[in-house]
Amino acid sequence: MSLNSQDMLEAMDGIALLIDPDLVVRHIGWSHWTDFWKKNGGDSDPVGVVGRDITEFFSEGEVRDVYRTLFLDVAKKARHAVKINYRCDSPVLRRSMRLTVTAVQTGARTEYLLYQSMTLEVEQRPAIPLFGAPTGTSGPDIVKVCAVCAKVQWPTGGSAAGTEWIEPQDYYRRGGADVVVLSHGFCGPCQKILLSEDE
Ligand SMILES: [Zn+2]
Image (cartoon, rainbow, N blue to C red; front, side):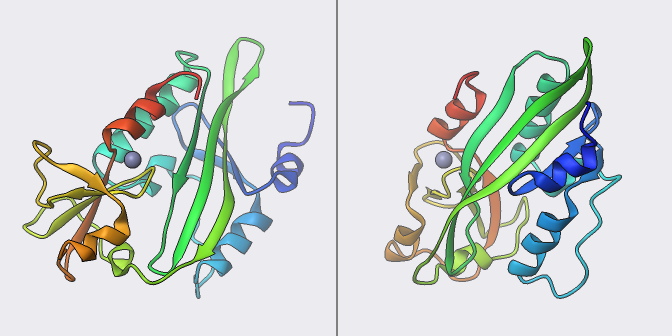
């Protein structure tokens, strides 16, 4: 790149990272990252990101595996980009985000992936405690939430057969339990969008 990569990252909207073709974070736009951390309730210093595999920050299981495959596909030019609008809610905030991952080429070689995560919209709404539940991948009280649209698989309990995906606010209307463990996955339509080449 002709532009200093650090300057470029600082100038970009949202959280901007350069990750290497093995998906290890090499550079980060610090100002936005620090802002994001503070806004989202981090009391301590922002967590260190440089030197870590980007997929560590994704929910373990299906979500991490699918994003890892997609990012590696961008790195080896098997796909052009990953572009997805997704929800990242807290109990009282409906947060719409956009993720884009594109290759930064030096000649024919992929030097980095540019990873950019932007907040599009944040709305306050009546609390949905479900979004504050601890996460895990197994157990009797598992509730699966789509990592893209935030819909909840219903009935809960893990198996995909005969289930539907409902709006998170309908979870409690249908008598969903208060004490649960969250696991993230993808509903059918979101999986299709995520895997499609041109979003
Ligand atoms: Zn979905």
